[in-house]
Image (cartoon, rainbow over all chains, first blue to last red; front, top):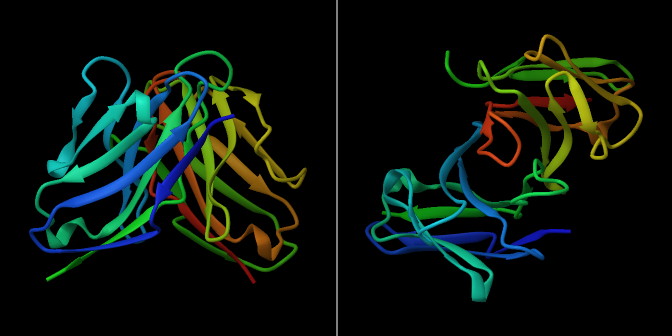
Length: 116
Length: 113
């Protein structure tokens, strides 16, 4: 079974400061990894994904994440926070093959607040 | 539109009533998924369709929940005899195939009074 841990249910940063949202996963084989963002009363929007290849992936809105196999981590970063980044962020894993390779497993989410 | 659509966006019902939630996936996507998002449980997988078949229904919480998909397109999630614990946001997603990126709809917020 796979699991995802997001450290910190709430994170506050100042506008212009670095954003760092942590995600660790548990899986017997390296899965596919995703970060989704959810704005109030909206669905989930994909920020970025890692499947294979380069371990540093860039997404929309200036976000990026690095897959570190040795640390089983996929932390999300953005150099400079904007007010519009305030939302809830979800890390998710998808088995890269075999049984269950359709079921996303999500972390509990991290709510990001940006302070002016 | 090009994205996944869901209807209704909000549904308020009385305990014991049946409800139907609809999902229109992205055209050409063969895989369709239902998830539930609630305060206590976070985001949970409910069911997955490949074409019109549902190989995995293991996430459905009880036999009051059922889902179907017709024509390899529209899907309906039905909850019979709703209970207050069914209150949640029900999210639908679709993808080109398994092990590929899932695109989510805006969700249906269900409130059971």
